[in-house]
Image 1 (cartoon, rainbow, N blue to C red):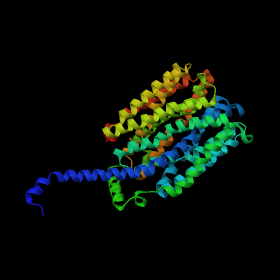
Image 2: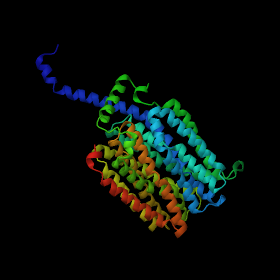
Image 3: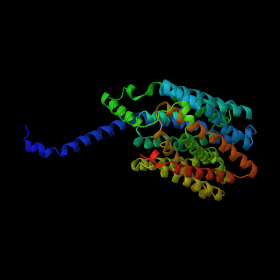
Length: 444
């Protein structure tokens, strides 16, 4: 047995040893959760985003085949978000009640089938109908995952996890651009189908397969995760319970009457304007600089998204480390606005336009994961389910407004310049509104 003097000599180090063991246990536990959840959710979102915006590549041939004007294309691309808007809140509330596993699987199966079926479109009315149905089917996936992450991660870790998940938007450009370009370049006439028909078919089927996989892979909550030990489950649940104790679990009706929720929706609307303006029109903008081959266009679209993926993770890590949210959202938004303006100024120089579009894409995409640290800082439970869905659905109406306005302005002016200036202004508004949010409400 140790002497009293020896015990006293060791005792000052004991708390440090215990803290080190606790810190190691925490790191190992969250690493286990991260490796289990994030890669799978990331893959699902890559497929989701690819199915949402592959119409930008299909446009390169589909528009001529179906005799669609830029206005009709912009409206069709954007009408996706009308269906999305109408079904977003009820979808997320259902997910909160029945569990993520079943509901996310349902969402993926239905949108994959509808996306593939778009290959049969033969008129502008059919184009509108399939885009609306795709939006209705996909409604609830993204806000459902944002809500799902609040079940597993406290605020100080959620920013970087959301950023990792949302790099799917950038990765879908890195992966999807070349793949879409290759399909458009190499599948023309195969089996008697046009290349854009193959695009919808080949990029819709992975969602169906992942939907089936979701039923077997995801766990609804911490307590049902068989891959965690009892000690790890208890630790994770204590962290979530402690954080939720200080949040507002609002009734669904109260969410609609909360001004700060509508402020978040307006901020998100401003950022989504920029996102889908770039996502839907990027291939067209690159083509206008003088690049004609669809495979080259596909490869070039990967460049801005590759840089954006890195920026998203680095900025989110810095935000989590410093516990600061507002400026980490506002500054990238302003950078995105500058990039859009420069892309219009340098529209006829491929190299300079690509530099500007890369800056714009980096700035725009970086705002998104950090934006979601704002509303999740004060919402919990059913209030979080309804609030996140409301913010996402209202914000994503910009996905209807943005491509429609850019298409209308392009038909009016025969240039995308005016559309880029309009999108830049929207990003500046979003940055200013973000800085109007009290720091005490969102900074951790």
